Amino acid sequence: MQIASLESERKSFGKGRADSGSKLQMITHDIANNEATVAQMKADYARYEAVVQRDKDGNPINNLTIDSCRLTDEKNMGIHLQGLAINTNTNRRYQRIGEIYGFPISIISEPTVVDGHESVQNRFVVEGNLKYKYNNGFIAMSDTHAACMNFVNALEKIPGIIAQFEERTARLKADVPQLEAIVSKPWGKEDELKQLKSDLAALDRKITATLAPKKEEQDGEVNKQVNTVEPPAQSTDSKKSMVAEPTNPYQREPLSSRIVIGGCGATPPGGFFVGTKRQADNRAAGPKL
Image 1: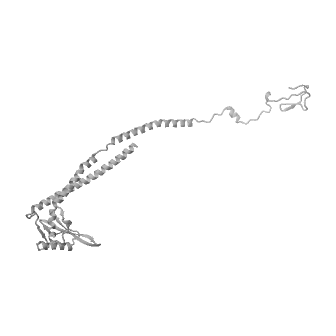
Image 2: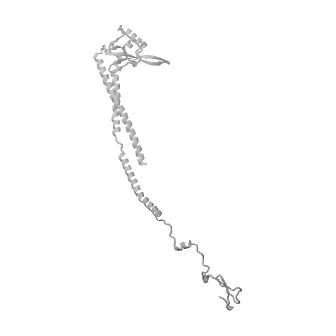
Image 3: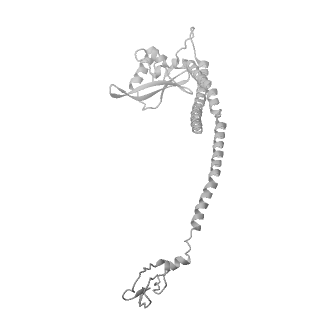
């Protein structure tokens, strides 16, 4: 029972260690991806910071250009962007429409269902090492200024996104030592289980050795009885008793086996019987023995 309990405990421990190993592998993969993403975002933001122009309050000046719009004022560019959001269909492919501070701006059309009807929705992104979106890629449809500021705002968000990734990565890294300890920790009762199994094997050998001679002795007795059983020897008398022989009619019977009737007086008519023959007896009458 103790061995079975320890075996069950070891299996449970092994499963927990395997699960921790899988989780550690996933976390390590996520950490590597996050760090690579942060590096790419930092490179994009450094590039943006090197060329961005700001007003006296530190706000970025909009440097938007639209490829298919000859007008450069904010209002008309906003109206043009709103028209692209309504009428464009790129069939799920990114399509360039302009740029901001040297970063390309693209639009992508994605299918959606509105009130039970299929339609297309368009999202706008700024492309660097990664693709950046503001307001999830949707531009303002009622405010031309906000529509035009969508792309510079996407670039301005990069430091905040970097901070989120670094915080997430730090939390993942905090779990790594504990998971590594679980994965590398041996099961503490392995020696105990090995000793119990060794003791059980020794006991089993002892029992086997104890029972084996008894079994051989019993088998020997049975074989001895079987091998030594012989039919009983027949004596001479018994052989004689098995042979039918006629009785000699002239054989003299012992005196003790005969009854003699004695009498006084004359001899009975016909004489006396002697053995099996009648004989006349002319002897004088008198008592006969």
